[in-house]
Image (tube, rainbow, N blue to C red; front, side):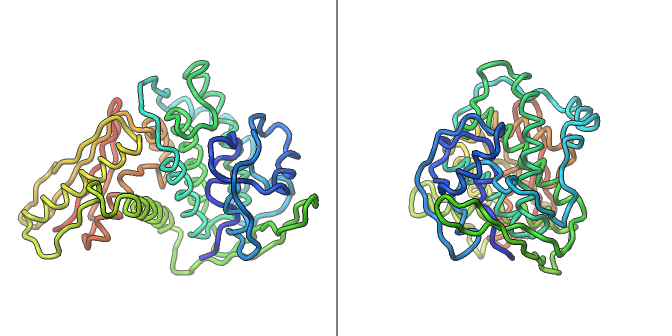
Length: 369
């Protein structure tokens, strides 16, 4: 597993305003960014952060700016690079017409740290599974976002979307769609196990940015048909880790499931845990309301199905639209987190699914007690 070329948030938010994030871009990267005229007109300068020379993720772990590696033209031997024809051609426009229109509805503001966590963990997971050069991912992500932003904003009307503000559910819905549309594209391209990646090297103040080529080799046991599942597991674990770290030792902590319990006791304990995960998503502003329930009680074989419902979630439009694209993986963050919790608790997931109906997202998990 390699370290990331650029920290999660740096690529995920390619032309967002810097004041939406609490980290800093070093000056030599800002200089590189300013050579990309037209990519962003909303950059407001630096916030705090530092650069380390030790590891390539450390070098850029606190950068939140545009796709810097677009400053150079380098080959990345992995999935074919995105082109304008692919991102905004006839096929893309036809697919766009099939998607639902973004809804105008009242939704709470997201907690910024939580929103950044969702985006960052999704990028980090892609980096860890070693299926695409991350410099190419930035470029592809930019093309998709560039093509999709204007139609999305026009569908909602002027003044609705707060560009660059992850706390705005309209903007989060859009940028999460663009991120997962790109991730699923890279994973679905039958990626090679060995490819080339351009990595930035630190240079002196005022010096032009330089890059070195590196050969990336994926773990041979991680086959292409396992990439989407592995990505979802990594994202779910990252979110669960943060929730545990934030709420451990408080009344809001996710209750554990007793190791020795009858099927009836286990069902009740799992339901209590899933209910608390839903509540934590509500605390973070991800949805207006939510609940968890047992949709199919334990059968004689010990199989039980749980259901989690969110009202007006921040991924309402993007989740529906990613389903239209048949994207894998998708941004079903509540499902990913809940499955990560259940797997850690020793349960094997038999099946899972997500459905959208009106303003609700409903996740189903079937497992054996």
